[in-house]
Length: 67
Image (cartoon, rainbow, N blue to C red; front, side, top):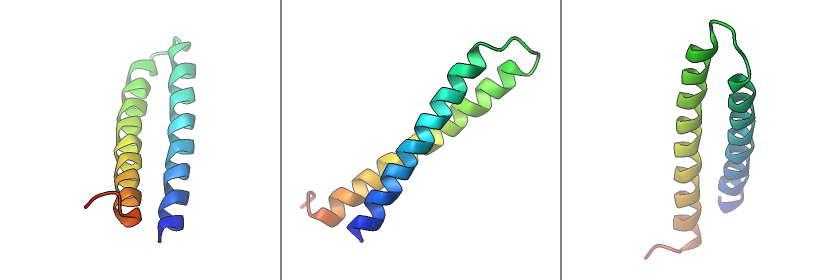
């Protein structure tokens, strides 16, 4: 179970890195959709960060760090 959670955690970190890079690339654009795209990327980033934190807490719980 801990291996599954660890793999999920690293996948979440990889997705988070991709979203961060997309956000940085979006900052250089000057088209009319840039503000709405930036907002969507920010929402995705917050969601993926929440998932990564939840997975990290689950790994700690499974490993016996809590209690």
